[in-house]
Length: 338
Length: 291
Image (cartoon, rainbow over all chains, first blue to last red; front, top):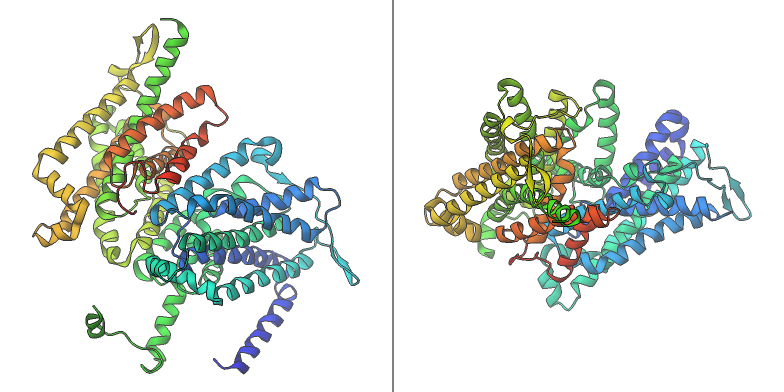
């Protein structure tokens, strides 16, 4: 893709996002904010899953940490502004990840997944039991949402204003996506792929694998926290089931699998596909679980690369790139290597 | 014996019964994992499915014993289908796909039981011979829980006999340590895998049927017990039945005495235990290889 086309695409995207609330109305604006939140959340999980090869069944604890952090800050700190409150949610997730990282970098594979399932469950139970802080099953709702102060320019109403909140969410979540994108392009970000493919070799090259894992883990958690904080603001509510439940942990994994864990934008596609499916399925049946389960099975069985993998397969089929640009690994070559 | 002591004893038996149930589920999970490297996340869904099958058979025939015979076999049948037609086809593509596939299967089973049986708690009566209480150290104790312990011990005994005294057991143990090599020696490993998967889900099925009269049958049944079983396998060490057995007992006691002494913390005690174990032994208490 050349530079010019790229600029055109970016412009189209920005214009589309700017006009979206006007075109689609309030309901679909809200749907889009939900999509954006879960897209960032799924991408943050994919930093672990797709890039580093660590499957976490408890990513919701960071999503929840962000949500509860922001909600508690807004509820208890009088007169706090919007951005600091968001920052507190962000930092809460970072702190939680930093505390857990010495333990979790020691395990990998299935043990990592199960450890997170359990840790996520602890957080869920704690959120239910520590009624005094978290409000138990009711969660924290109806906390004040301050105006967004841009010094010298404006104070923008956020509470009960869908369109304003939409622009705010698109900017914050879009920036989050960009930061994660640049992170994967840095030399350090490339290391995570190395850790996934061959941790021993990275070790021999003189890098410290556990520390690399820890940094990626904290980074991933931070943006899960950001998504969670935005979700709390969006709903003006945070609850154990809505932010910490095991379904919230599985949600981004499913999105990432469906969209394709092999690419940065895969989880975004997956989230979009799921959003559409849910919108559609809701009209016909309330057995969303059944549909999701069947889709998961079908994807694993027939499209292991997910949506993006499927697309690039089609691309390869109909617009094959010459072997000069993309070295095709033939069986003979593989055997020679082996 | 004074009341306090007998209370402790009763709690101990409670813990033992729960530990045994955990072990039934965890051992199935663990032999499947040890052999195929698949952590079957649908395992607890099978456990729940068996409870529903048990309920249905009791409804039809009125006999708990027939349910105990048939329901686990029916469950194992579904497990074998999962292995033969789904997991086997994607086995070469790595573990992530398998893990996610079993999540999907678990969701489908959960949705299916909701469709067929609704979401209410379905009671299963304790079989007549085992109703009543028995006097242990001056304290009435339900016979049924002792029966649960006995069933688990019998199953454990049979499993140990099969594993260590028969040719099949020998093959299974060999396959646990190196499936490819056993395959190369001319043993039909895919069939052995299928069989082991069936036995594993059968064990979950037995657990599901025997727990039904205690907890009743409902769609969330797989949640708590299942989570505990996964924690048992992780903490005890993948592929180590011994580890699963010991940790199951520890967890059984942790849960029963935990509720008594630190009821607020009880739900997280096991997870704390696991976190501590994994901090010092990343492969679990008795695990020897990388998971």
